Amino acid sequence: MSRHFDTIVIGVGGMGSAACYHLARRGVRVLGIEQFDLPHDRGSSHGFSRMIRTAYYEHPSYVPLLQRAWGLWKQLEEESLSKLLHVTGGLYLGTRECELIAGSLTACRQHVLAHELHDHRELAGLFPQFRVPETFVGLYEYQAGFLLPELCIAAHVDLAMRHGAEIHGNEAVVKWKTNDRGATVTTTRDTYTADEIVFCGGAWTSKLVRDLGIELLVTRQALGWVQPLRRDRFQLGAFPVWAIGHEDASLHYGFPMHAEAPGLKVARHAPGMPVDPDAIERRPHREDEASFRPILREYLPEADGPTLSVRICMYTNSPDHHFIIDRHPQHSRVTFACGFSGHGFKFASVVGEVVADLAMKGRTTLPVEFLGISRFSAVESGPSDPA
Figure (cartoon, rainbow, N blue to C red):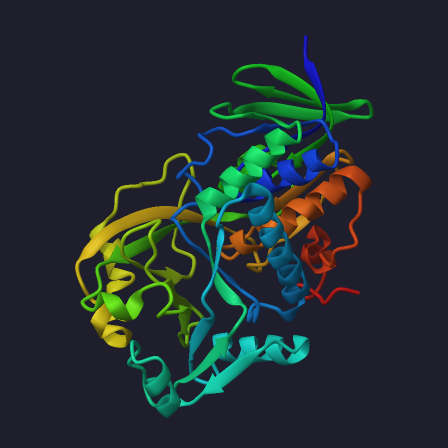
């Protein structure tokens, strides 16, 4: 005999854990189902740090969602009694014309965000850790820092359970279906029924929801940690989160050293090699270190020390590299959040709130219209501004 819930959340990583929390704290009877441990290092929400920034070069329409996300992360810290967010400021480097600088300035000006723009000479005095070309400028924003993803997921899951949610780890979904009466989810352990299903399956979304009608490209991404030659210059409190924009629109980015993970973290932000999430090679290759080592030698020479660790995660790339958050166009009882394209974790707190709204009411007052799935049938190549 099946067990019934109001809502079943499939995937309890960054987004799914937040969805469970927001649903449960509203009194919804929630079941969260995760195929791996909680938290785990098999998907996209691990690695001891995830950047959070407000001057969003990708599209200024993300900024109101980010501002709500900041408030919700602070709320989660207070309720969980855990330190989850470190505010460090953010430094973005590149030519004035590069996408990172131009887009970040647009977001700052449109949303009146506190920032400073520094020329090459000023950068040398303020941030001596960097050695950049004379053509580079630096945009510094005050509301930036990093989250601790494993602890964020743990806090969301713990508080969801405190509010009455039931969470199952190491239980994979085998099949699901919906009809006018409700939804049924069958796993490797049992069968459950619900009024609503929320899919937050990350890199497994296309395997879980096969009729979205869009291609989600899963790619393999390397993260590196090194021992700086001068530790004092890269410690938390002395060094911001940072990104360097390149002509091909890719980035390199990194974080200050902190106690949760030894070493200075650095990585490349651009889609990597396409992979099947169930067959990804998780052992580091020589090419993985080559994806970040040259950037240290060129721009951060005092950080160019021994490698401590290389870890592998995944991006789930939407066709336009913007998120997809919506009700399913063919299944009236299904909500989904996917395609976060390597820049989604910072939004997890607010995405949880959005999908809880959509699952409970079929709509939300938060400005996510520009992230709807219907945009892929429109002429525009990117998301439109919210109405």
